[in-house]
Length: 235
Length: 185
Image (cartoon, rainbow over all chains, first blue to last red; front, side):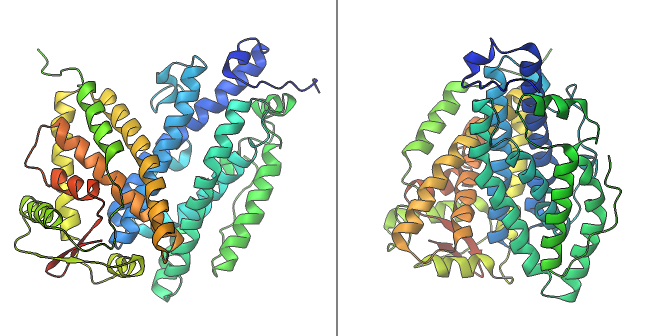
């Protein structure tokens, strides 16, 4: 492993090794694109499905925070010299497969917040000790909002499972969406992940994160009497 | 030949300045003033939902009960949404779409951060708010700021989003229509 470097500012990044700069840029682009996809495909459409004004405005806030995450990652990318077009949907970055399925019900949104945002928390957690400090700081600023989004999922899950009908609809949504989530964490032999860890930009292997996610997702589902469908874990 | 024109950034900056100087959530629970009632009447008329009385909520738990009621009508919400979509469609014809969306996203992000802090301060000052209600309040206020920006960009002075914003700017939170009443917090 290389001697870890610490890059405290965007200015310092200019003199970092090329492999380090490219690795950081890939992560920033990935977060900027996926935050925007998530807000557009799930959070904003969910406002219409929310059952009460309380839930609608809460969902508004969640959607705005997700858009806000995109804005902040994009601003960091622009400071780093990444063209804006590369940080928008339609650029070179391929969307995650889960974004290809438009939201149809409130229960689907609750399932996504409960489980997909847990996956997002793990991704952000892995950046909390990143050697590129502007990205580390952005992850730290984002984390409370990500935790709130997952809590949103838990709170509305607790509401839905109070009735057999609500629980059945939520379980169906979990069964539909959960199989897409393990691949969030990338391939087991990812070259990118190897480079991220080499430079201490990220801390864990994709498989370690995936296993942690499966454990935490199983726990939170069981807490509310839900089950997770069998999935193939290795991407 | 295209009718698309550059986005008027100075106008958007003036809207952002109005958002920053508003008295977000400063008058929650206070007795309604004549000004509040006049803005509420203008909002009701512009929304076109017929005659509605104006009522008030005294504290956060009462506001939460009103907002969570499963019997609450969402006709006012649907009417606002239809108007919002109409304004957005007009603006997308007038301005470059990606520039418009980017500007509105950045505007709403800034407004959202501002009003979240104001809502948290009001909840701490008054007590009794559920933790999630601060997020609900900031969602409502940031949505109002966004709707206000759309109305201003579309130069729609008769929009209900003008009077709705004035209510927020005066420290109120319009909670929506419950039965035959518009409820202000």
